Image (tube, rainbow, N blue to C red; front, side, top):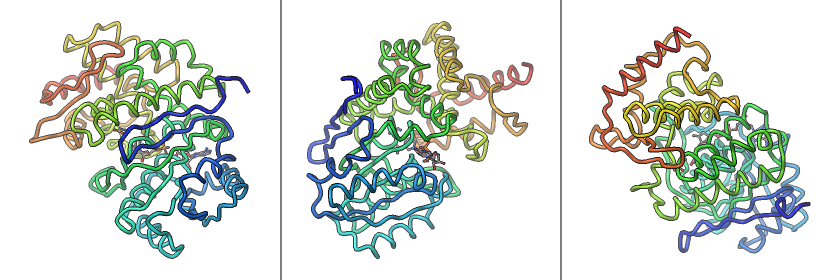
Length: 379
Ligand code: NAD
Ligand code: GLY
């Protein structure tokens, strides 16, 4: 193993709630040894989904057995629908049946769905239990497992019921990505690009050169991409855990993206990361239209998203005759960053220089979207 591929650690500095993110290869087999020093007793529960149960859980259970840590397992159905009240009830009651105490560790082994649901269950069970994140998608390794946002969905909207609850440890084993479908790797890559676009132009330039290596499974490139992303997220979360200010930057591309995700019914036609990619492209195009960034910056972001086979234009999405500008603008107004009826949008002055714009002009955004949709229909 090269030095670059050796385990790396990033600290999320939150006082008494600080924790380490461990990033490396074959870490699931070492999970028992990593967790043992922070366990109150040698007993845990693994929460996972049925895809990950087949592809990755045996590696984690072997790692726990090697450290003499007993475990129970809860396997939930894979997919976004699992982040619901019924599964929250099922999971929390199973955890009670297993005798989970406040000081015990619950392990979320999976993508953002399992991480968000398990984190929320841990937040509310006995008014707060400990949990560790063992993310198995690129999206979860660079974003959802870090920072303590946990939630479930309701028919009224995504992630509307949740809590801030930080994990006690994050174990990001990039070998887990070996079984992840390529489309899911691409979707997670959109969140990696986001960190370069927000405030790290040298990282963006590194990604432009290394997109092939990251996408094709080069271990050192993946570790560097995950580590740099986690460092960026850890710094922002440490400065603004509850999103009173700069944490909103992490939503670059998300306000446009969420509207498209909702318009596609949160279906597999448009994955979250794909929506974020399109949303970033639109945020840069809109920034250029408002004279904030140079048009060349918007073109550069879109060229890089296309190099990763991610959508950079509405024309890149599956055809959807129901998409209309007024509907999308209304969906954008459902964003959690709407305050007093005013929309906060993340725009950019340049690649690597995102900014928070309060009181964005929704009518102007609707006109922009109308033009974009018309152009996509002509192409
Ligand atoms: P996901 O959890 O649905 O995983 C995607 C698919 O990959 C699923 O079918 C899963 O079973 C499968 N899978 C996972 N790991 C695998 C592996 N190693 N091998 C084979 N298959 C594997 O989706 P996701 O993209 O990881 O997460 C999306 C969720 O994350 C959304 O609900 C979103 O709201 C949430 N999210 C939360 C935050 C946060 O800060 N909490 C941030 C971003 C996204
Ligand atoms: N994914 C956005 C955040 O964690 O704030």
